[in-house]
Length: 554
Image (cartoon, rainbow, N blue to C red; front, side, top):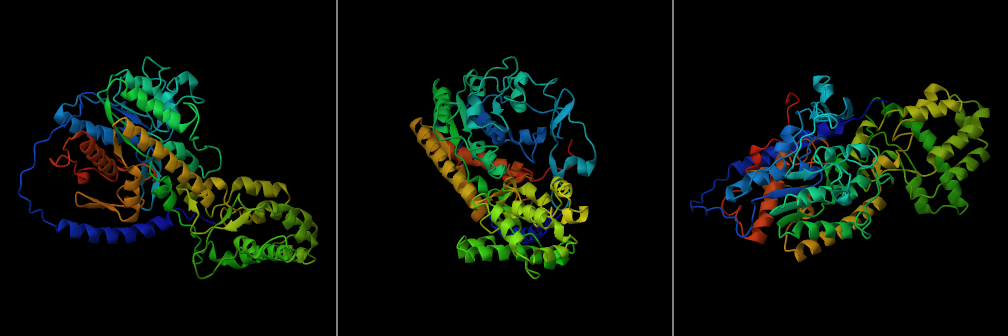
């Protein structure tokens, strides 16, 4: 079965493009008839003379799954610094990478790949479009020295900003971050917070906490990257860590602006892949539907039998039963950890069915294979169901759905199944239930929502107590997702590729998205410190910032 990769994005893009153009034309037709002169720009009571930014990839300017020069130059802190310079702001330094390819190396060995580009149908690796490139940003041989005003560290969670040695290459990869290695200079054991405080900032921005839930989300809630606990000492609990950050940053009298955490499940990384991408008109899928319905019909019969024995409720049978339509888009099959594991029961019921050997014959399997196949079916489908609209699929799953899992196919062959049959039973999302890492179940989404709510309550409380400006990034993203955001005669949405706000990784903003964020930071600063970036016409024109970087950008 061939890849279903990004076919749905192309269809979506055509619809979005048509709708967006109509809206933009209406906006362009509007004429500003205001003739009243704008007031002169003022900083209010804010001191921007020494601005330092702390955070994660959103602060660093990461775009298209990579950090590269052009993206860093369009980071929201760099945009802010240019506006701050108009009212007394000083220079703003960033740990620029060496090229516009993106990616990182360690002593000549690549440890992170170059950026994503648009290949005409969806996101693709740069090298798949322009051919092999050499990653020149090497954390072992050519790190800049600093100090740096932009201390955004891609991948950092809240407690990482307090961790000593987080930028010590000797601790990599177990306890160091390669991007942190690039900013610590001659103080490899200094924490990111210490690097910031040592510069005696007059003004700071802090946007941290996204990764405290995002890491869990992007791994499908499979437990390999857990949500940061709310309570606990610094280095463990979010509340205490965030309090330590605010206390240290403001101890010297610095002013600042912080941002809360958006609902990460609303970003295109989780909203682009549909729950029902299996198209019966696809020649690699449609002809298989009768066979698939025969296979799953046998399992549905097991569930019905277990219901008749009082072992399953009617609702449980409805949830587990799987069938494929030959006229409508079909949901994928997934493994749901919340379902009771019926592996043993499935095996027992199948073996007790005198018609099971005849059922195997349609797959070319002999009757003596019955015990082994019954065991494999039980193992594979003990917690399976078809997806619903409430399930969210991570963006990389689009390259997996409909492909043969070679490892599982090899396992099935080791159990005596012929190669062709093994491949049929190892098709991701069809005969092989998708693993937890590819999907966020409703229960996992609830965990993320609860943590985000509690983290944001802490951010709001502590920022208010310290008199800091607050950017409500959570509400901003909700508006972006629900209605789109209008700015500078452009409407940005959370659609992948053509929405304008999110880059090709479905997580990080485009340059235009970062420009919009910079305006929101200035709006919050105006409200708290009496500056007038907005009223004086000093918001940036987001239309001057690109939504897509050319593959030829070097």
